[in-house]
Length: 149
Image 1 (cartoon, rainbow, N blue to C red):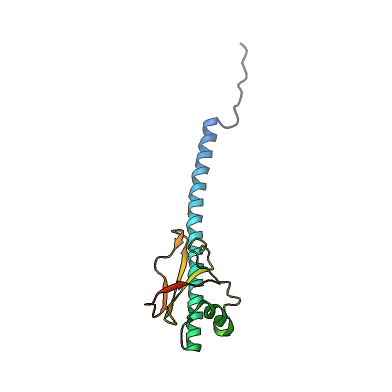
Image 2 (image 1 turned 120 degrees about the vertical axis):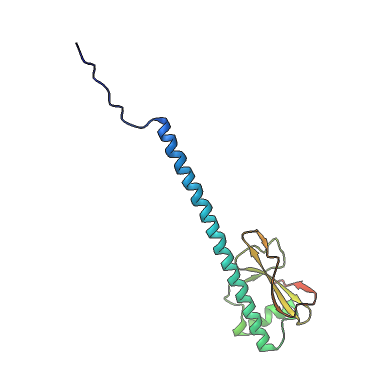
């Protein structure tokens, strides 16, 4: 009687490989979703910082001048004049078009009447649109007009 040598099957079956690939894909999907959520929160926090910076600059302007900017010329020229409220080096952009206002450092500033106040909108990365509720500075009861650079 002759013994037939048995082969040791080394390696993985196709089913085992497919299970590993599916598990890796599930883990990757969970990681990507978590990363996007973290990134959205970080971008919104940066946009909030930009709004707070602009609000402080406008309030400093009010402290120095005794009124809020009344025209876009005043907003951009006078804010640049006063070092305490200067827009220089702040990495802030002001844009009137809602479609173009979509960055962490891009704000929509609306001047409300002659020196009546200012409304500041920011882009919300969660909803992918401008915030519905702006930051209000001063008496914003007048008609507000977008400021353009």
